[in-house]
Length: 474
Image (tube, rainbow, N blue to C red; front, side):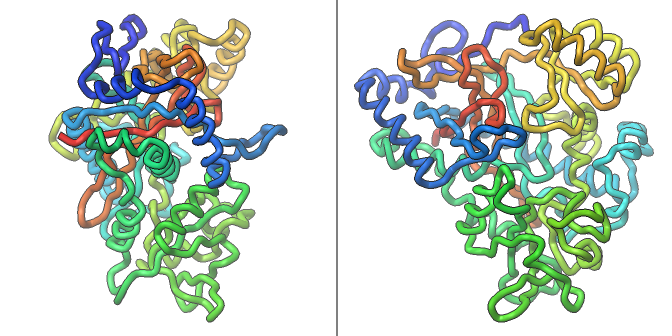
């Protein structure tokens, strides 16, 4: 796939302005560059004032950083978005069906569509979830599906974030910032709104409350604390939903229910939106050294007296080795071919695939099966000979820990630089809500952009930035 020329979402492949970007190009051409530079600085000041930061682990300088924000929106046509939405919904429904199946009858394993060892030997598979029915039958209440584009009608799913996907607060703040700075743009262009996400999230979580809950369900957001990289988002979402932000030490099991400490004593919680990983949520059932979770929480959950969003054990569905089977998973549970394609993937645990990857390291992207955030990966075309040699040794030592993929020619969109507009590579993370009432996809999502010229790494932890994502009305 590296042989294809890069597709530019504003100018296409033949330097002809694409219809979705006509209003943006017209606006930008009429703007004074000095005003735009002032606006870019103003946006940075707004983010700093609001406290929109993320934490960087393992860096001695500047533990908290601002995520760079680019003022030129990414624009997606209504027709393009409708196709993406259908593909995302199909995929999310298949993931939920897969999770129910592997923790119950395991029919997909018996049918041989996914190898037994891919699940049984996977650290993300939780035996504690076998036979457990989550309230409403929902495992993945919140999903962040990472998409990349390589052509006019070519989209690929890069990753399924089914555990604790982050970034939605940046999507909302990016839109709020653009509305504040460039209201005239929104008067000229009909853009689908995203501001209802917090209320939709709250409604979706309430719809997943355990049976027997009378009245309005009590919802809480569980955070690991202020040192977590996504703490800003945890507090932001709790505030916008009007629910309590809690840490493990605020919670305990009281009379068979999970309860949070309040000034009037302990109050039972019906739905816990947890931003703490599986291994840390309950020291009695998982890591005994955890100070982030609640002893006995899993017992309350298994008894059907609590909804955990997302359900424990969902990580098996976004594991990068399982990802390679997603076309089969979609077809097995929906009876349809996948609308959105997977990136071709070599599973290094397989001897033939490993041999190919070792012979072609300089051309491939190699990722840890359980990795995230851009850490622990090799981008062959930009790596030095020394880096490739070191990675070769790691790959030989633990081949089952890695998958490899071709280096995609990610699409580019314009960013604002001192020299004017310049193309940079992007991906897209739409946010999906799942409840017994249905699947809801916020129009747009978080566009992450590689701010360095030629870079393909968009993660904020690796120097990437973000921009507002516009889905146009018809």
